Length: 323
Ligand SMILES: NC(=O)c1ccc[n+]([C@@H]2O[C@H](COP(=O)([O-])OP(=O)(O)OC[C@H]3O[C@@H](n4cnc5c(N)ncnc54)[C@H](O)[C@@H]3O)[C@@H](O)[C@H]2O)c1
Image 1 (cartoon, rainbow, N blue to C red):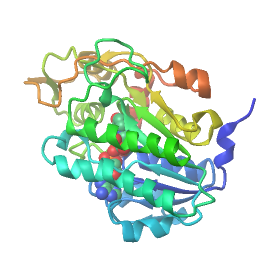
Image 2 (image 1 turned 180 degrees about the vertical axis):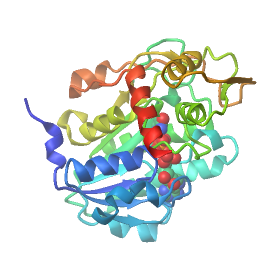
Image 3 (image 1 turned 45 degrees about the vertical axis):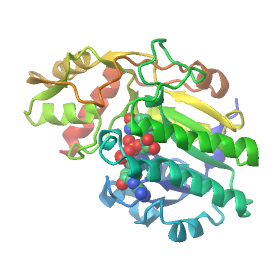
C-alpha cells in the first residue's frame, strides 16, 4: 500500500495560523515526523509564539497578518504546500463581522489570486481548513459533503466563502487545492486561557483547577468531537493524496456526544466536578451535529483513531503535565 504522507517529507511548507491550536500541532508534526522546512505566518492575535517553542529553532516564524499582501506573498517563493488555517473564531463572530470577512475569506481570495497570476511551479497543493459549522442545524444526520449548507453565523458564512473561492479557483484556473471541513477539534495545546478555546478545552481546564463547568442551555446539544491527532493526520493526507485534488472532505467521527456526556466523561476521570447552568448564547444555535466521514474513508483511506473517551483522557494527561 502506498504511504501517501511520505510525499510531504522534506518539503517546503507554509502554514498560516501556525501558532494556533490546530496550526501548532500541524507544524510540530510536519517538522518532527516529516522533516519539513516550515514557514509559519501568524499575527498572534489568538495565540502565542511560545506554542511553537519546541520547534522554534527548526522553523521560520513571521509575525504578520495574512491580510498583509506585501509581506506575505514573497514567502510563497518555492513553497510546495500552503496550509491556510488563520482565522477569526466563531465566538467573536457576531461582534466583528467585517474582520471575519477579511481574515476568513478575503485573505483566501488574495492568496488564490496571487497563485493564479504568479508562476509557482513548485506549489503542489493549497489546503483550506473549512468548518462543519456551515451545515448549521441540518436535520439530516450525519451530514455529508453534498448536503446543503445552512449558515447560521458570520463565521460559518465567511468560512464557506473562503471554501467556495478555493474550489472555484481550482475549477477555473487549475490551482491545486484540497479542503478539509473540521468538526469540533479538541486535544492538547488548546490554550485554556484562550477566551475562544472550545468547550472541551475550557471544561478540562476548569475541572483540573476546581472551577465550575458552565453548561449553556440544557446540555443535551451534541457535537461530533475530533481529536487533534486525527485532524492533523487527515489534513496532511488531504494535502498529498492524488484523490484529494480539488475536493472537499469532512473530518470528524460521526459519533454525537452531548455536553452532559462530556461532563460525565471528565468527572469519571478527574473526580467530582461542579457544574453551573447558564442560558444559551446566540452562537449556540446548532442543536445536534454528526458528520458523515465515508467520503474521506473511501477516497483517502482515513478514519479517526481516537474515540471521545480516549481523546479526553489524552487531553487531561497533557493538561496535568502542562498546567
Ligand atoms: N478548532 C476547531 O474545532 C475547528 C473547527 C472547524 C474549523 N476549524 C478551522 O481550523 C483552522 C484553525 O483553527 P484553530 O482552532 O486552530 O483556531 P486558532 O484560533 O487556535 O488559530 C488560528 C490562528 O490564526 C491566527 N490569526 C488570526 N487572524 C490572523 C491574521 N489576520 N493573520 C495571521 N494569523 C491570524 C491566530 O493568532 C491563531 O493563531 C481555522 O481555519 C478554523 O476555521 C477549526
